[in-house]
Length: 242
Image (cartoon, rainbow, N blue to C red; front, side):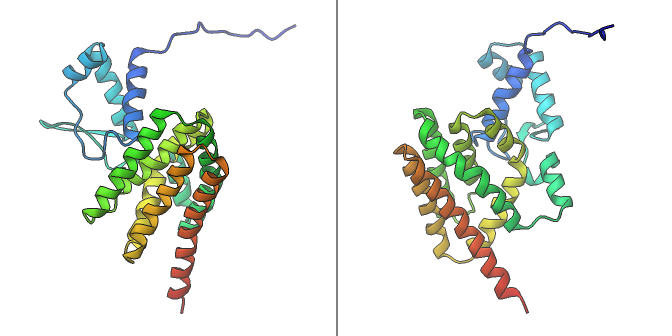
């Protein structure tokens, strides 16, 4: 006899889930920055043309995820990645005692291919986000800050530009760990002042190749950037060895 199969009715995507995804994307793209306050629920509901209950449900989900935090009497704020509960990937990497070089090797596989695909598929909106992130990186370092969020937003924008949902999902899940990795990189790299302009120039080269829709050049530019970081830490570790 055939085994009975239980089927459940298909439900349309909840409106609160769509609100959740919109706000989450603003955070991942760096349009909502760590420490930044969300506009009040009433204004969000009006802008999105949904009920305040729908907005509240979406915000609560983002709070549970650790992307937002609510401060009594102050409002809702984007949480610093360093303060968030780790993603499953970040937690697993921590348990494995992963090194900076381990992270760069994974990035080499993920991001070189992403840059090549972005060069093929990027549209004007993608280029806008990439250029905006570059401008923010420049302003941050000119103000003697690391520019970690802008750097991460640049790499996330490349993933969005691939138009590959698997690539985008992997990078979203990788987000917190990547933030910590980039911050660690920049803290060490920028101790040598000449590296500030080198890193900015490497990002500009990646952007220029994507804008020119030159896949090979984009792949090579990303590979050169990640290789530079890997070699820097290898040399740093070698110098520190007894």
